[in-house]
Amino acid sequence: MRTMNDRGYELRRIPRERRPVLDRLASAGRRPQIHALIELDVSEAARRIADADGLVSWTGFVLASFARSVALHPDVNARRSGNRILVFDRVDVGATVERHWEGRIVLDVLTIRSADRRSPVELSALLRESKYGPGESHEAHGMMRGVLRLPGPLRRAAIRIAGARPSIASGFGPAVGVTSIGMFTTSWGWAVPLAPLTVIATVGAVRERAIVRDGVVVARSMLPLTLSFDHAVIDGAPATRFTETLRDLVESASALAGDV
Image (cartoon, rainbow, N blue to C red; front, side):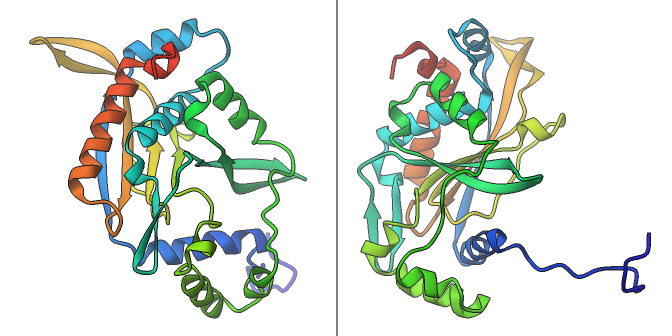
């Protein structure tokens, strides 16, 4: 189909709600990131999810386990602010969602307060509800309203300078987050995101795979998970300890048993 200008294409403005995403990606490109690509045995979790008193999604379960891991390793719940590290005392998690609203699909971030104190059932319900409707208001106030009107390079430079002030950096949203690609694919693998969070977990698709247990090949439900860390805030050893705690919580499915 030919476009109205008969040039074979049409020009569209970048949606205003897309600009913060571009700003975050530009910021993330300057961060030294380390990634952990892990494979988790979620056979026990699959059994408990099937028996749960309420609907539990895989993302909701991982989010609950992730938040509890952050609570056990509070040093990862932090953000760089200039030459200082800002450590949060509450486990708020940013969850990436695709929101359906007014005939469009908009990428949004749902901020879940005190996520470590919420059950997988409650978190799964929040994620389902967040997919429809207008969502949270991300409208800027005060000085930031003027900053967001600046051209892209000036806007990002102003945000970077403002982020050196802890009082402003603390308002940039959660330092940790979860995003899921498992519901969009039937294939196996990991995703390595470019994200401005200190820690982000990317949830893949659960698939049955052949693995070795006690010298015997067995079929188990396996989940690929990518953990990405801002190396300016977290060193390799703390990142590894956090990863192993998350592995233990996910494979034991303790969030579904109320053990944590």
